[in-house]
Image (cartoon, rainbow, N blue to C red):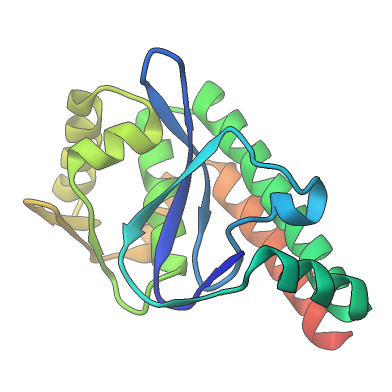
Amino acid sequence: MYFPTTAIVSLLYMTQSGASSEVAVIGNDGVIGLSLLLSGSNTPNQALVQFAGKGYRMRAQAAKNAMNRDGAILNILLRYSQAMITQMTQTAVCNRHHSIDQQLSRRLLLSLDRLSSNQISMTQETLSNILGVRRESVTDAALKLQEAGIISYKRGLITVLDREALESRSCECYAVAKKEQDRLEKMMFNA
């Protein structure tokens, strides 16, 4: 299991044809390797580091031992699993029912939530792979946000200038997943 502290990791699902789409984002709020808790086997997802940083690694057997020994750790991981299920569900709904503009806004907000600044280092090519859309679609959506004064975009560096406006451009999927994550975090810290 990996526990990022400053890194951000995307979980991507890869199709047989080589296309990909992001199913979840993990940062200092979570863990990579949750399948160890749920089934002990690998999942068809690929973890891709989006933003290099630091984190902690726990060997599989040590993680299993900790979960068996301490109910509090198991409880925290189960609550985190609920937050991940919500995020994955909202991502699936978003990818199917919302515009590229809304999807891009949601994805930028997910990055902001896991960064200590308003600058996101990400190319349009990376964003197109994450969203599972053509690069030109990302270019058009980013241009709309830039023309509205919400972001500044320069060759792989996105600066969010107006988070509130970005939130208003996003669909409800961001708010639903964020609300559930906040609720579960509150429960963990008040337990």
